[in-house]
Image (cartoon, rainbow, N blue to C red):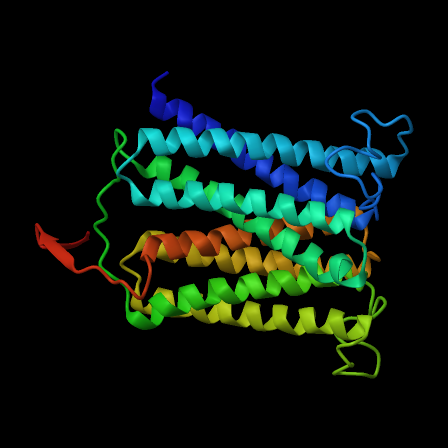
Amino acid sequence: MDKHRMIRLLGIITAVGSYLMLLVGAIVTKTGSGKGCGNSWPFCHGQLIPESLPMETVIEYSHRISSGGVGFLILILTVWSWLTYRSDRRVKLFAFLSLFFVVLQGALGALTVVFEGPFAKKFALALHFGFSLISFSSVVLLVIHLFRMKDGKPAASTAAPVSQGIHWGIWLLAIYTYVVVYTGALVRHAEATMGCGYQFPGCGTTIFPGFDSIAGIHMLHRYASILLWLLVLILFIAVRRVAKDQPDLVKGSGWALILITLQAVSGVATVLSGGQVLVALVHTTIISVFFSAMCYLCMLTGVPWKREPAKHVGGQAVLN
């Protein structure tokens, strides 16, 4: 097996590990196991192997161990890919982001364990999930980019550049998706999953509850999610109309619409099931894949504020 295949294999293993890290983190939150190891870090109750192992301790310590293992895999993948593809800017970018944010989320997780307080419980833990998501998506994009390379070199793109409207729309939608992810994480960490009980689509007789209550936090996420679904639908229609000659972009936007629809269904199921752990994990899985799909669309189009001129080869526009 040559080095390119070995790096791809390591990338796949790391991506799976990053996904499992997200799931275990969600289980920690849903089961209320965040204090399973007390206020000590990185060890549990100040011990490498705790004397007492109740379930909350097992869950919390498993999350710490899995996060450390994934962080080590990302470190190896980053160093190896940087040394192998020294001149590839995308490899360097995705590898750096995956390592930077996994370290950042680990540090933030340690702070929320060591220091008490409502801010640490709600907002800092929401940031913790958001940083983990960026790290996971960066690993996924790195793996996709590695598989798109030919003999260690980026494959030439034969797609014509998209319009400025579509270009900016994809990037702004990806940013808005990340904001919606934070509202969902806030719902989880503020224990507002059942803020409106089993009621859907409304929240009792109140349409706009005060956002200083758990019902308000819940409805804030619900309204933000509905808007996200509508925006993804608009994006899909727009791409089908003005970029139908770019199959990767059309397929990507189509998958984004499918995923956000499944996310909406799983959100409804989370409410109707009373916030069951398994349903919540499906909800976390779908939004993680959806955010990665939006990042993939951003990778396909490139940064909108630095549009590179297209060269014409054989009658087709080729992006530099």
